[in-house]
Structures are given as C-alpha cells and as structure tokens.
Image 1 (cartoon, helix red, strand yellow):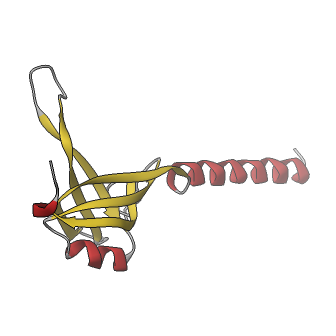
Image 2: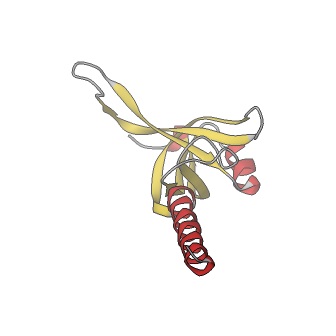
Length: 129
C-alpha cells in the first residue's frame, strides 16, 4: 500500500476512536431533576477523590416480587461549590439538577449521574406528606 492510503486509514481510525470515546464518556445522554431527602454525601476514593451522594425519593419500588425498597438516586458531583453546599444540606428535602452520561469516569465519580446544581432546598420537618 502506498503512504497516502495508510495515512487516510489511520486518520479514519483515529477519528472513529475519538468519536466512540466522546460518545461513551463525554456525551450528555440526558438531563433532568430529581427530588428527595438527602441520605448521605461523602468525599471518597483511593486515587481520585470524588463527591458521591444518595437522595431518597418518595415512594417505594419492588426490585423483585414481594420485596419493598425505597427509591434511591445515587449521584456524583464535580463542582466543589455545589459539593460544599450539599454537604451542609443533610436533613433537607432537595431538588437537584443532573446530567446523565453513558459511562462514569474515575475522576468524575462512580455514577453516570452528575449533579451540577441545587434547584430547591427545604428542611425535612417542613415538608408536607
């Protein structure tokens, strides 16, 4: 093969690889809001310290017949300002805005859901059933 064909094939392979990596790890698949009571919020990790949290949503779900489990929204946070705010809101009913990625990255957190802002916060004891 001549050098031109090899160069074109190499460029195509590199472009496809860049597209696949972008789609798997950086493409925002969806975004939305979730509301619930903050269960926990931690800063943890071995190599990459990430912010991880869990929101308990109202209602119940049954993962298997005869079992009852609460709805949990597990999320990661990359913005330290949002993380600082969330660490102060334990015991609050929160509405959070998130972005959903196809896969997690180690430095972005363990969840494909990344919270980027707090929309509303209300103390738990003032929320009406």
